[in-house]
Length: 276
Image 1 (cartoon, one colour):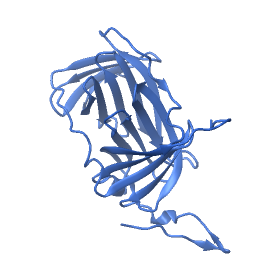
Image 2 (image 1 turned 180 degrees about the horizontal axis):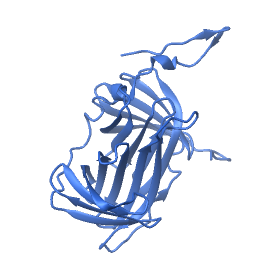
Image 3 (image 1 turned 90 degrees about the vertical axis):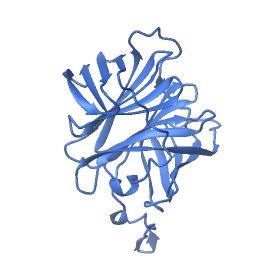
């Protein structure tokens, strides 16, 4: 484990020395130890239509690869073949990630319910160059539907439900992180156990409510060029399933799987004026 270093400047103790921070691939190793198992979607095909006139069609060729095509945001009407990773987070809900080896620095993540017909898209992309003060990995989101299914239930949308909540997340015997959800735009994190022990920050975040108890939580870091997509099940299961996209220590794009257990520590409510 590494511990934080402090710098004394004129009698003031500054924040942890960021030159000592680990790279993305350092902390991501083993972060999928407690993840729910992957499922094989061989032979299944599914089509989505998202807000913004984005269409996405996927055919699962085998247990590892899928052929997909898209009109709109993803602009791949001719089709591409990429690896996929799917997890059945609830009996009717699938978490799917396409790490786009065909495009190099992008990923598509889709959550859908085969019964209600509701779907939610996250598109993550690494910018060509870093911009000071801006996370290098950006994300866009869109609600949608599953074609051919009679759509029921509330449409997924941005949510304030997590604001004030404080949880710890156990991803492996050596990965324990704490999250405090500060506002609709930011969250605070610290590593309690693991390679990043003693490190923490306040980063950009986005929360969407998919359905009762299921929340899409995404963050984009400032210090390390990495972003992630998580589906938190805050119902009885208290499990989370996620993926990362970022730049590793060798300067290459890397996709990683993640997941584990959620342990709520408590929450606060604001008596009057609330955060943004």
